[in-house]
Image (tube, rainbow, N blue to C red; front, side, top):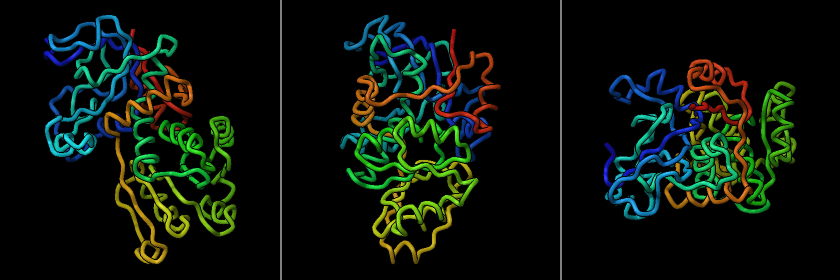
Length: 320
């Protein structure tokens, strides 16, 4: 049974995120009732609607906003539901999308155009809403700024490259793979740095005439953060939406105060930001990048593939 304000979505595609790997491995502060269903991102059609739902109908094609908020706390009442005191993410705190069906609040299901595939739709929510909030809502990127996005091949990076380019920025990105760098260039990246050939921070410093960049997106964590701070210009901003290599970041306070830097944490997005960025996806101005599709029964293989870092863009599970 679903609640009066919920819809039941018959999922056709679920996209993987590194969050799935972290939850599977065990997050110390996360208490789950096992067995637990992974998956934050999903798309499908509405199979049934609650008695209070008026804006969705059975058969509607929808994509799921994975952020669930209470709607009552001070942050929700300010429209900042990503800061909700009881904020939860589907697949992390709640049963996820690696399933034939998932129940969500009706306002977390957004209609999608008929020409957008379920696989592409499922690839968009978490990475695009996160990238939109961190660049537009938190870092306030402006036309003409230099933006460095570490790790060109991740789903978040493929979204951030497009958003920074759409905002009129010069986009720098890094990878150890020339193939991934060329694919990033096709998405809009302007300056490509292969860190196997030269340390990326040194390369960026020289390419900017020892000025540094205005904004850095560092979702890598402990292995890159120290160099990221050194690569910012005076008054620059570094945005941290994750830490895939470890959460304990080293920060030299002398750089922080002498260059007057800003370190900005960011995660997910509020409902308005989600709808703004998804509208750009629906218009084709931003494009989800689907790397590879696995059937649901090969979810373990998909996890191993993602964990090896071989992908460029999103890894998706097709649900028959």
